[in-house]
Structures are given as structure tokens and as C-alpha cells.
Length: 167
Image 1: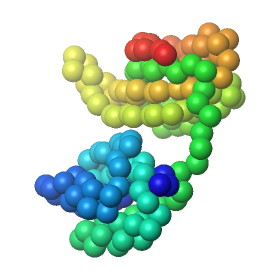
Image 2 (image 1 turned 30 degrees about the vertical axis):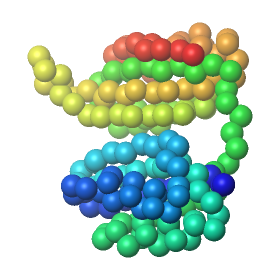
Image 3 (image 1 turned 135 degrees about the horizontal axis):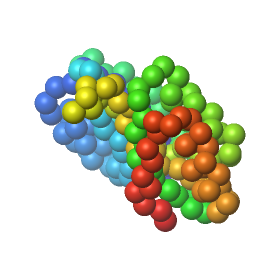
Image 4 (image 1 turned 180 degrees about the vertical axis):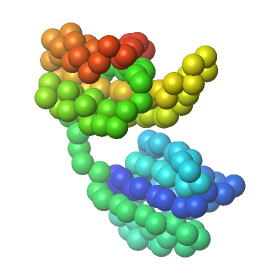
């Protein structure tokens, strides 16, 4: 059995997850991990699958037969997990370059972004454009957490951070 990381994009419609799951199951694959998302009319997926090498080409062919689907794939790399994981919710006034600022701060501290989910919305009471993100991070050193909080607040006075969980 080998692990493969695949990404899929296809115009969204009902039944896509079922089609993908049926193809994986039909070829003896095991669905290990995934992120599935609908964004602006497009269904996007990242999947980590485990499957016998002898069935991999058949599975790829089955997935590529889904109308309108584009796919990329690679063998999954072995990853050494960080010692500590943290998840934060961050809210700030929306502005160009905000994701760049956040990612630069985290990179400069040697912190790995494991999951980043963001959205634009209007504040209900004022209509001000807001940027909302949920960010899951992998820390290799326990001292990074304090530096991380300081770095994120340094982005601006409008930044609000809430630590959701750690493990």
C-alpha cells in the first residue's frame, strides 16, 4: 500500500463526493484525510489516499473520467509531526496583503501553517469589511507560542486573536 496526495477541481454539482468515494472504494483505496470545499462554483478537494500501487493507475483513470475534473497527484511524503499544535481564530479589518503579513510573521518564527481557512465578510452592525481566518499551526519549540501571539498582534491594532485549542 502506498499513500498518494491528490488535488481535484471540478465545477460543483450534486453527487461529486459520492462519485469520488465510489471510485476510491471500487479500486480498494482507503480515504485517510481530506479537505473538501465549494468556492465560487468550484468544488475543490485535497485527499490523502492509501491504495495498492497496482490499482493506482486505474483509480486515476476513473477520477479523470468525472466530467470537467482536473487532478494532480503525488506520492505522499513522510512527515515528522511538530511537538505542539495550536489553532487560532483571527479577525481583522480586511485589507490587501494581510495573508502575506500573517504568513511572513509565522515563517520568520519557523512555525509551520498546517491549515489555513479564511473568508471575507461584512461586520453585521457596521458593514466594515472583515477578514476572518482559522489557522492551525505546528510548533517545534514551546517558546514559539508567546512570540507568535506578539507577532500576530503586531500586524495591527484591529487584530483580534482567540486560541481555539492546542494539543
